[in-house]
Image (cartoon, rainbow, N blue to C red):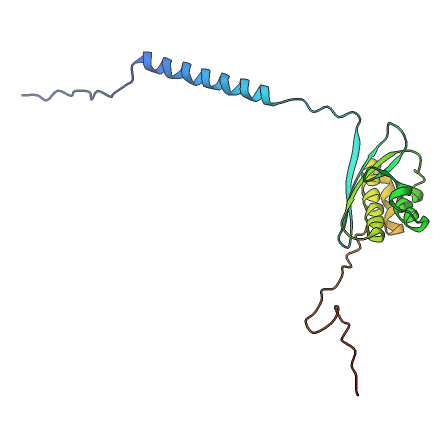
Length: 175
């Protein structure tokens, strides 16, 4: 008796079920799209600004400059003269702008935290120098020569046990 080859039947899903699954997937995708569209709200920035960060000791200054708008200098939402009371601190903070002769060209907003007033002023100077380079890369050479781009990495040394400060020993008394 000759053997006849029979084809094995593979299981296939009926076409109705496949179509139903595709429809469900499309509906889910549409729902997800609608949710995403509802959540996304366009962020409108009034003007283009440049942002940078400056540091000194433990002080960190986040600097933003705008080319448009009123030409003011705000530090933590206060005018520069109120935040940095001495002329020396004001000159430190404005040094990078003075070097580039851009004092009255920008609206500057700074948020500075940590450290003392002197280190905050130097952090502001460092941040402004970084932002000016983003604004115009040609400024880099003069700012680097003035030393405003290098982050001053000197930090306070930690206190050691048995000493009053990092190195100050208690006063020694012979008698």
